Amino acid sequence: MPKRILQGTVVSNQNAQTVTVSVERRFKHPLLHKTVRKTKKYRAHDETNAFNIGDVVRIQECAPKSKTKRWEVIAS
Image (tube, rainbow, N blue to C red; front, side, top):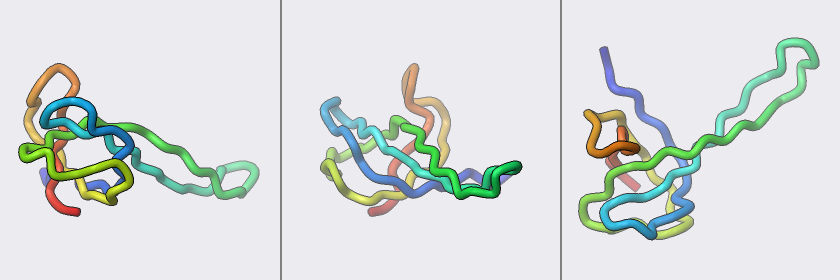
């Protein structure tokens, strides 16, 4: 099964080797037919602490790195 890849914006980089990435998805409401925006935050592993708040990054699923980290940053 392929690993999922998501694109989002870094909203926090306060922890060592970890960034928090906010990913937005858009979909049409099934009844109202209005475009809805939902965001979700993912904690991702950043080995070199290279990314800062506001950077647009791509994250990929990986094996668990800690209690909350299941994603890693693959590119900016």
